[in-house]
Image (cartoon, rainbow, N blue to C red; front, side):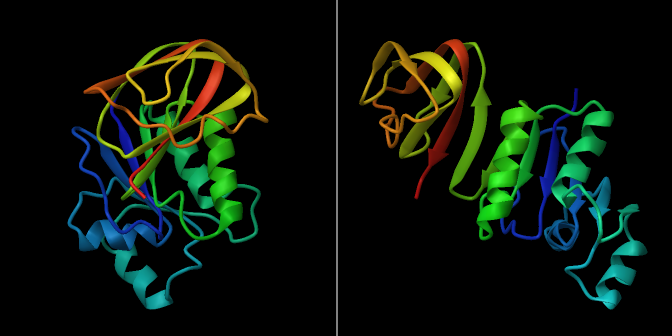
Length: 200
C-alpha cells in the first residue's frame, strides 16, 4: 500500500512521506506546485481560486472537479478517491487550522470513517489508536488522549502514567501529558482513543 498526502488550501508546510502520492485538495494544489511536489491529481470545487489560477493548474494537473453545491467536503472527496486507490496511511495537511467547523468535520472523518487518517500540520497531528500497542517517539512537547466511546488504556514512559485506566468521552484529565523516556508506549486494551501530539 502506498501512503497518500492530501494538501488543503490551509497547508503551509508539506511533509515528505516516502513513496507517497500527493493530492491537491482544491487550492492546496497550488502549494504542491509551488513547493515542487509531484501531483497525482487535484480534487474539489475550486471555488477558492481565480479562474486564471484554475486554468493554469488545469493545464498542468489531472483535475477531478465537483460542483460547489454538494454533500461532501473537498477533503472528504479526496479521501474517498485515495482509498479507492488502496492508499494507507493518509495524511491530511492543513486539517487543524482556522475554521472550527472544518476541524470538527475532519476529526469526525478520522474517528468514524478513516481510522488510518492522520490530521497533520506543522506543529501538531492527530491520529486514532485502536486496540493494541502503539509506540511514540519523544518528538512532541505535549501528548493528549481522548476516548472515542469508552476505552481502557495503559501509558508507559509518560510524565503521567496510567495503568488499565478506563476513560470515556467526558474525561479530559488525559490532556497535556508528555513523554519522559525516549519512547512512550500506549496500550489500548479496549475501545479507541484520539492521540493529539503538539509542539504549541
